[in-house]
Length: 275
Image 1 (tube, rainbow, N blue to C red):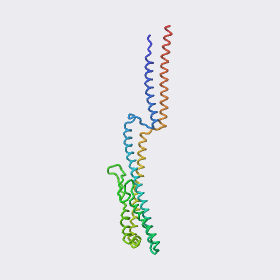
Image 2 (image 1 turned 45 degrees about the horizontal axis):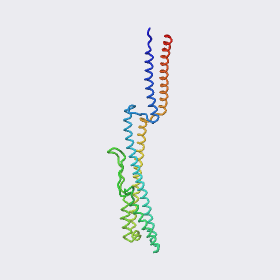
Image 3 (image 1 turned 90 degrees about the vertical axis):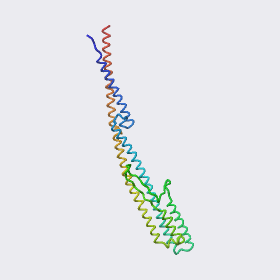
Image 4 (image 1 turned 60 degrees about the vertical axis):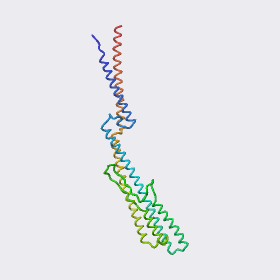
């Protein structure tokens, strides 16, 4: 009667195929853990990868909008700080005007010098620039959405330049410094009120930009979280999967060794019988 050994050979071949497939899965699992990515090749999840790429683009756009809004907020904060300084300077000029009346000629000369220095400071503030962009008398538009019809926050011009170059010059030149300043109290009060309006305007811009920044930051966080759910690997889950694959690899190796030993035993039996 003939003895067939093909069954053991076929079993070994299947075990080898299973072993190679398991090793490929182990390599992929190790790559996931090393990279921190669930999708390490397009074939892993074509649909998920497409969605993740769209989310990544949206995250980049949203992060850019956050930076732009925050830059505009810093710009408005600089405006508010400068306007507040201007208001304080104008109040000090008013104080000098009160001191000037009834002072001696020598004291009036000192007050006039201080007044001229404050006026120079005020003009310096009105001519401030940020990276070459005028801080005042300049309209700025800030996009808060990537859509063509998205929201835009407009920072209206704050025209302190007109106050320092026109109003104060007229007040001081018409009457010789503090003399003219003191004879135009009503005009000066109007100027103070205008600067106060500028303070409110700058504070309002900061508030609007702050809300826009918070909204965009929260949106960026949500997009990043959604992108992570698709792309980021669950380390605990993948570690368990890797352990399972290692056990499967060991089982396949054991099956191959057992099949080889069985064939070797049969061959030894045949050889001993022939002897």
